[in-house]
Image (cartoon, rainbow, N blue to C red; front, side):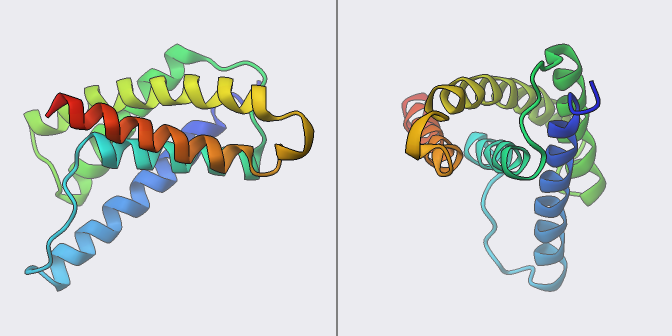
Length: 145
């Protein structure tokens, strides 16, 4: 039970760091072109949190999906809002899409890593899984646009 919300902590840390870096770039280098806050950014943040959880915290045996959904929506709404990257309705849209992307990637990442965790490929399985899922999200996002 104590490890069930560790993934949300890693998600908050990664989202906070990305928001902080983007805020600092906007403050000290306003002419810099920053990447947009879109599905690719959300998937990168989510996959980074999943890989960190796998290597640093160990995967939880049982995930509480409703709690993960609530905390990820709050994370994706409040941290970019506090950093001044989004405002109002845009923050709510970002939170809804971020929650959906995070839950889908968490489910896919967990199932792929569980299947690849046997044999000699187990140390690099999370990184390979995250890379393949990021490429899949890129392909999916290009079909949407």
